[in-house]
Amino acid sequence: MEKIGVLVVAYGARETAMVDVFTRSRKYEVQIFIADKQKNPFNVKKAAKHLVIPDLDVEKICQFAEANKSDIDFAIVGPEKPIIEGIRDLIEKRTGIPVICPKKQYAIEASKVEQRLLFEEITPEANPRFKVFNPKDYNDVTSVKKAVYEWVDELQNQAVVKPDKPTAGKGVGVWGDHFFTKEQMFEHFMSNFQYGTVIIEEKIDGEESSFMAFCDGKHLVPLPDTRDHKRAFDDDRGPNTGGMGSYKDEKEYLPFMTESDRQNELNIAQKIFDKWSTKIQDNTALRGVPLYLAFMHSSSGPKILENNSRPGDPEIINILPVLKDDFVDICYKIIDGNLTKVDVEKVATVLTYKVPPSYGGYADVFPNRVKKSEIDTPVDLAAAYSLSHKYGERIRVYPGSMELRGNKTFALKSRVVGVLGIGGNIEEARQISLEGINAIKGAALWSRTDIAAKHHIQKCVEHMKQLRTQL
Image (cartoon, rainbow, N blue to C red; front, side):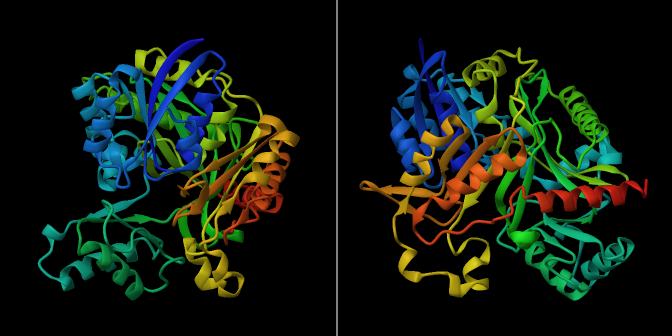
């Protein structure tokens, strides 16, 4: 077997899944060098060298790459922060190691306004109505309030408030979820506006899918659709989170979608890529996953909610373990500019996250369910791992926001551990995922119980049927 070295810039379970598929390669002996946000127990075990960089500072990551460049053939980056801050530009300039992620200039998730303007130019039919509010354009609170209220009236209150860039404010807010009156909406708006530009978009009624595509800079290679569950609690209630779990069907599209919906997604993504890439002289600049599009399927077709310039967490976890192609080969083709196809097994996958009481406001909503004595208790994954004797490769346990202290692992503040079930259909995959989740012992962790549940999927199917009658 050919021996190669890979640098993985890691944040959570998404990168644990990358490490997993690399080390399961049947063609290559892969040495993993990991620049990690925390001392992740899985990554520590699998890595040839592991360095904790809590803030994922790009200079420190680059120094780690420089120190090991003779043993590293390429690097891959999962989290958005180092991508936005130019980790690829820095590593490639100083070490010559090819990096799989877009260059800094084209990591457009750094600006929601930049995204909207790009999509308005290329595919306006898929762009929700929006208006940009820049603090430089207003002299006082009264004038900006008048402009905001006029725009929200035009949207008939169906508004989504988004800061252009990550801020110290309240982040994205949705009418009917985070605020219910103009006064509440404006308070949310100002919490972001005091730090910079804010965009107010039309709220779209529909069902959401996540679309991702690998890219070698020249070709866009679509991956199967996934569905992310962002709301904290069952029945899609509670605040938005980074994602409590996700699923993919055995088909390339989701149960509530049609082949036509999928084709519309493909057409929109390809149109964006074709027109965007013609503006870019460097045909390697979009390497990685430059289009991770959140689509809302509405009565007037798919609309783009947002785009990210990285693999989805958790959505890419649903796909990596069921790639037919060796992931190392895929990465080499991305770097060489000749990736034209990716084969994925025709199976369903369901990923469920287990998280700490503080995540998603669980401890506030359900204080009686949290045993304080268990909060700082080590997390015991042994029983979950042992399910591989029953399910083989159809179950994967991916530690995320966990920290190794001595020989024990402890939960941190974000999504602690994800369990992926792989099955012939969604329900089979879901049951495997839930069995793994329920086998995790120790610390006071919790999870949603309805990720990819039949009743939830059927609700989505019925909703889309209703919307299609409005076409």
